[in-house]
Length: 289
Length: 289
Image (cartoon, rainbow over all chains, first blue to last red; front, side, top):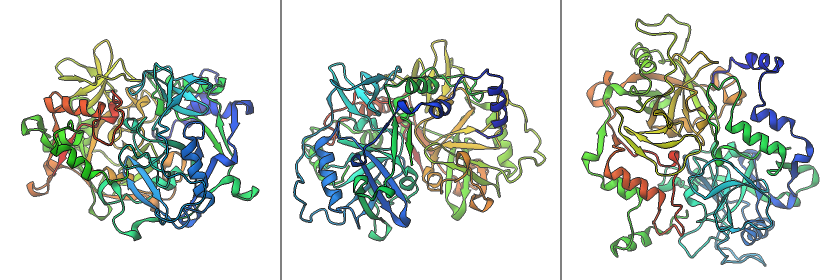
């Protein structure tokens, strides 16, 4: 935690006596252990000053919600909108300029819950550590998930995950207002909200915003809100402006080694490895260009 | 997550059909279920603009480290110091103006690890949910803890916990540089660092600082650092300026009800309670005046 140990670390390596750290596992992972995210599954949000937030969408888990979001993005729905809420240690939330405006063709006002799905057809990697919120925790196609004994699987509310704000059930939200988790994983929301993706780049842009002073961290005055310049699908950007995102394959050998290294830290800084790791403390490695 | 449900919540209560939420349990907790933190165990940090961060110290867990910190605070050791690091989603760290200056009498340069202690004599409340990092997780005297099968107990690196920065083992840090956890609980640090307390007020002051752009979130240029006006023990402040801090007794009936409500959310917003809760997602309720 202080920084003067880099030299010792290097000495340790050169002596060949130090097992791989999580960062080293990531650095050494071969190309075959990464999957490229299609540009149509990337949402690019530009805020004040041109700063970019890139979100990987999860059509495998919330297809109807993601379809709405893509339809709205293609219409420029959030352009001129704003971040409306920043609750310290919880979420940042954003909204379009006018939620009541006439919607584009294809938009659906009332959506199915999409809070969970069947596990069949998915490649599951088990976390191998106990979980407080699910029978089993693990990873599926690059996502952190909870799983039940009866074969259901759902995206977990880890830091960076993006969900659909809603009012009360049976309302499930229509995708116009989205939130990103910024604090300690609020896993109590799992299976209670539609999770539609994950921030893969630009989290610091969101967590760097001033906290709202109103109830639940909403901004009180409109001028406190941080304006959204535009939200667009990467596939609608010119080739040269598209972010390129690769996610480590969670069924790969590199990811198994990464999980092992997270649970059994052998960097010389550690005197006592934990032996386990929490689902949301083992973020799936992502490369963004 | 959207906010329009307050009315429904009230209707639900008046009909007597809604179990208590965590907030309600806290609001209803009788005075006997709270303990007052002695002023000598409160560290008050004042930063730019007079904003205050209040830290509850943990002499039961790290007595030698806490003693050093108290000795340094009484000497005004951090006055004119600075926050030197803000790593998004991890920690904020601060330091005195001159670590090499002549230390006051009583200060000890080399301290015992104090990473864990025996559980005997402590009142333990079990979390009741699985934990990824310890044989058992729970609470002791208002602190979140991990516990081993052989009777050891240690403070857990939950959001808000304060620890002592160090270089490599066997160095354990002397308490001059402290950090507060700001992101997803880095429990891999448990039993690897001396945890000396918890931020009980003013977390937003720390998380609201700009993120450092250097390696590990350190500020690159001195002028980026946020200056510390002073750090003082509350017991050294005039009576009228002392913060008053009460922590819910973790062995109380109110705390058991709070834990139950966190694990089995019955607020009308929830369609599916998790049934469990993670240690660091059940922050011990604190009242600060």
